[in-house]
Length: 283
Image (cartoon, rainbow, N blue to C red; front, top):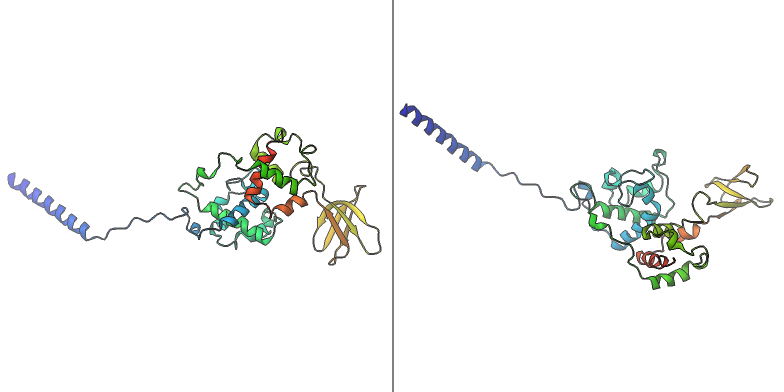
């Protein structure tokens, strides 16, 4: 019995020795390093230009936020989550995102967004900058969300308003009591930057005047305008269309939001914050 027990113990020791030697000779498998800028390979990119990102952020807030949300995870209108978009994840210099903004996916329900190529590239840069912050759970760090947007200078905002806005708006007229009507600063900022209000919404009317050679000018609500056709609704609710050939016939469009769109590429973050800081005082 003692001899058998001794042999079993010797066999066990021999097995343990061989196992130790085998493990010592097996090369260690290195632990993969966590990639910087998120967990998706396409997110490792060069740092973005801060000025380009700031401009793209403003443009995104005006033209994209309603569909894709403030954090890119989908908005109230039902746009897709950009944090899971393969196009957005693989974009490096706008080659994926810009064509979508310009209308390459219209057949799939993504309309073309009216902005210049430079503005579209700025939006793409902003989207990439958010992608670079994605953490282990696929969400941007909550630290990116500022506690308040009231970080501007109201005095500078008043000066900017008087120079750029006072020709169309009045603090004693259409904007009187604005901060009382829109008490949330973030909503107020989104409203004025996008030009929402009396000139926007369901009652907004884009009108057009068409002057064909040898005919009197015809005016009405714009229904369609492209390189080949202009169509309008006349005051009697009938419609009329004109075939276009270059600058013939003459077409003059009146869009209440045109002045605001013209400023999209001019606003800086500082301008927006300053004007907002001023407008919240209009109670």
